[in-house]
Length: 306
Image (cartoon, rainbow, N blue to C red; front, side):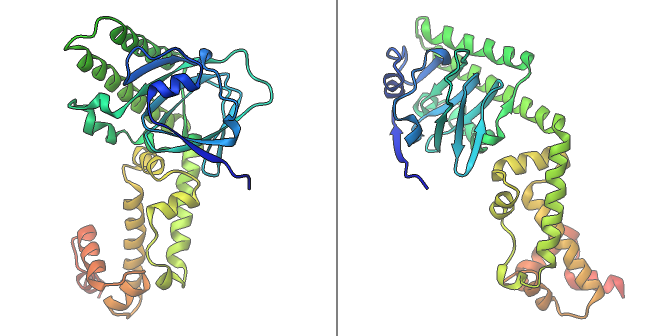
């Protein structure tokens, strides 16, 4: 496998310089017109890490973006989110597109200092989605977001005063809330492929809990489930919550309780033996989870069958 070195971009000014753009008008926030960006010469040999947030809508990129082993081809208008310290790579296409358009919003975390978003930005889970889980926008949705971006630009380009930061932050918050709504719409409109993921999850958990090797494997983790289904953990949980109202962890617990009920009602194994067979190191942890989920202890559940 080719060796790529990793380059860290610490400031928005550094990013502007690297991409052949004039100095940013504000050191901590910038909206960049995508058609004006010059790709660096070594772009395909480098992995990139930013010390700031990047939210972008791109069209006609003619490039592949890589997260880990995942590749994503950008032809349509798509939106994606990168948080500080995420590693990603870019493979430029053979024919640079003359039709590149869109925008990139760069925000340094210091810009959120002492504002409502300083903590709440962590709640927007799409910053942890993989690149192949990008948001596909309708024209109407894209226009809504473009208007917000224009407001942000206008605000930091006019005279900065004591209200500016809060006004810009509230625009960013609106942008993120719309993005969340549009992602939710995508979970619903891509129903067929999403239900396929749900079906695969169901089969994966059934096979996992039926495996005789469960004792040595232990309980499945959310990370393991997400990796097997080829999604990021946050995307999978958001998708499942939107389809079923339950997170990945809750799905694991549901399947576990189903298996436990089966063993309690059809075998004479002790509670400790069942806990051990289901991958628990301590039977108390199993009993506690069972009681939380069913309002009965494992023994009370078994007695209700006899």
